[in-house]
Image 1 (cartoon, rainbow, N blue to C red):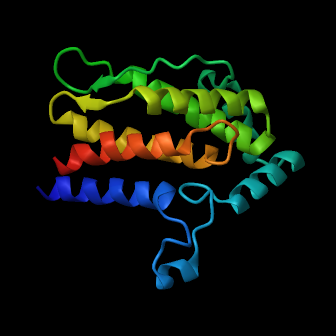
Image 2 (cartoon, helix red, strand yellow):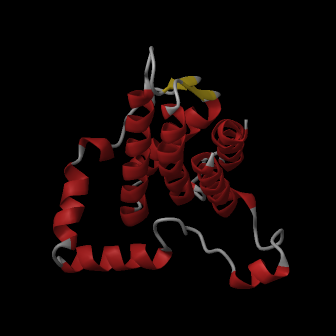
Length: 187
């Protein structure tokens, strides 16, 4: 029971901090601190520093950047394999389709955020939009909660990076995070 409460809290905080409130809708005390996007794993300052380190050729930043560039998951042009049901644990497991697409969305979002390359941005956007318009449920054995927590967090991070990208459907993503991920933990 404690695990379930913890997971609900984590998912709820991610959804709310990523998509749910603006300074206009937050209570005055919370609004005074403000939430700057992006703001989950990375901040604008992080991306400014990353760009500077890469441009200066500083190590180990340049090696890390080159590893991202050579990753098959960060290549533009990937076609998402979104489905309506993800199964984690038990028979018919198909969760690899989901976590591979989410990793691709996140890595392409990083590349776009650092370089401004719209091919990577389009790829991340298309993956996120496909999943947010198709995914309706996460099922399987008790491992489904693990999948929802881990991959939901990755999904929220990729979406946070893409929130201002042209054509990214933020409202659709918000709805999917609430009706699929959050709902799983409160049922």
